[in-house]
Image 1 (tube, rainbow, N blue to C red):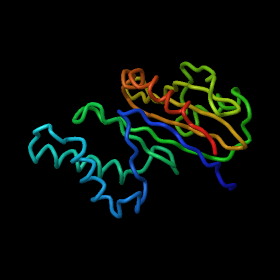
Image 2: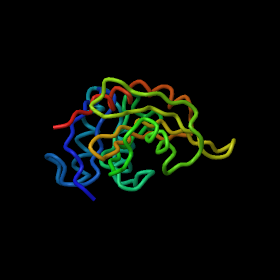
Image 3: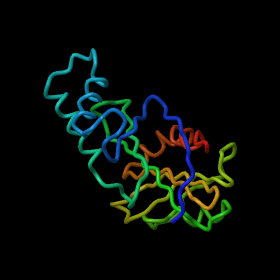
Image 4: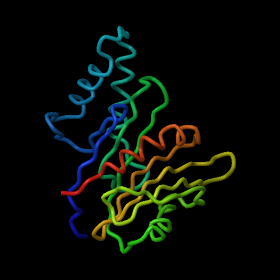
Length: 187
């Protein structure tokens, strides 16, 4: 496998990076990161120790969990409503022969199957071609919705992926994740 290109991206204030491995930045261990994160998110809120412990446990769980697909490069947690629904997106990068929006559309169902419900090309990105797609997979009573932003550059496909069983979650964060994806720039 070739070495993926160096990139940067911008997260909106409602999204936080979740480290996949340690050490990470100034944090040697997951416990250190979760404690600082909890203190930061709950500063001046007056919540009790039980709520702090729950948030810290959630952060540790999100850090340790495996991604829905193998090999995520980054994980992001939407934290606007602390204590609300947990929303987590993953960024994957893999080498590929894909070169066009049509090629990316064929990859939109990768790992989850299903059908592409809606899709469109993304303009103004740093990618040679980029699309956004909503994929629906599973049986009627157990559907999974995938919000997928895919882009190709220099033989690599970038996938910003959110899987959830609630279509309202997908709808609520679609614009936010599109802006995150479109913010990706290459060195």
